[in-house]
Length: 147
Image (cartoon, rainbow, N blue to C red; front, side, top):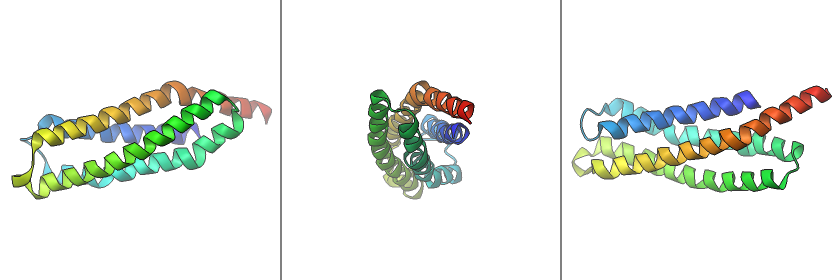
């Protein structure tokens, strides 16, 4: 469980780094093909991470750590997932539009949008690393001792 969780975290952070690189290069020196590749993967990466958390990780935690604080944290994360997925879809569309219709593009607005997205995702991941990952590690250790 822990390793798959960490894998999804790393994939999301990689997307954030790639989006930051795009934001830093706007409006010039943008690799259109790389931009399109990132656009194609941003929503899927975020959605897959959230699906893992909501379908596997959160039920595991709820079953094995009956804490009100854990429940509240997971509810918070679920609502953030919904917002991040909508934002990821918008980022995907904005990147594709920027590459396909450069004459209509607003690089300042796109940069602002990208920064808002990846900063929010990084905050979300920081919370998961500080609050959820230690619970996952501890729970897996406890289960291992019982077996």
